[in-house]
Amino acid sequence: MNRDLCIMACIFCRDEAFRKWMTRDGPSINEARAKEIILGVCGVKSRNDLDTNPEAAARFHELVRRPFLEWKEGRP
Image (cartoon, rainbow, N blue to C red):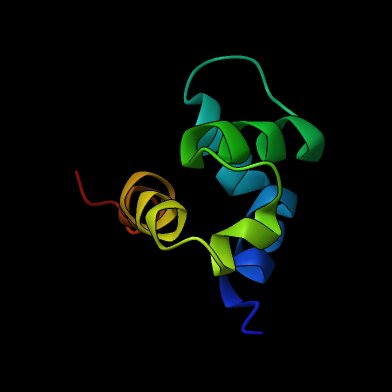
């Protein structure tokens, strides 16, 4: 089984910049809270589901990965 998205989501949750992006100007969050947000946004119970559920994978790319990378690169 390919685990690329699960691994990416785990790395993102540990990344301080990602957690800052998730809350923008709000209070900081920890890794566990970042995981909860990803699971909720993607509609899954586990980050492993990102690699087995095509709809969840699409939501991860569209709502999490792409916007975060654009923010990180300074794009609007």
